[in-house]
Length: 113
Image (tube, rainbow, N blue to C red; front, side):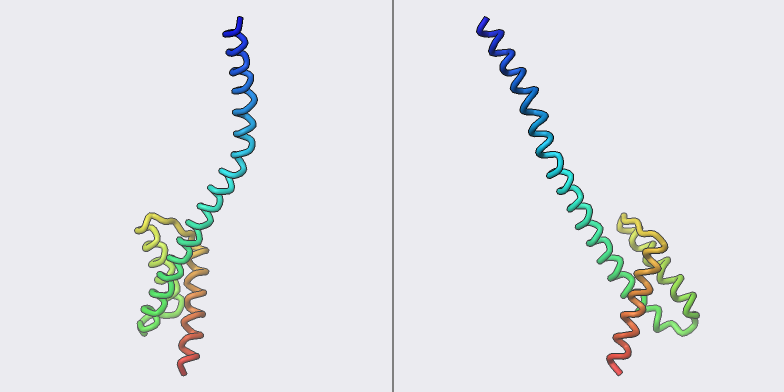
């Protein structure tokens, strides 16, 4: 009889504590996963910024291309380089990164004059 009570106590304890611990830890685990995704996204966007700044500076020296051709080449370069790293970037985001890098480049050129 005592063994049956012990088994019942352990079963009741397990059925009570495990869901309670799960309910307490689940939001913490979700928040941690979200924070890691945010950090990874920020790091990927910084890499994209660096590539965009590099290619904009390089393409500005090419006089045989129109501005639209330079922009398209920079966007394609950025998409390809991110893909080479195993990271995906949409064309819209790549275009925005290239445009921001171009504006930054123009600002630097104007400050140096």
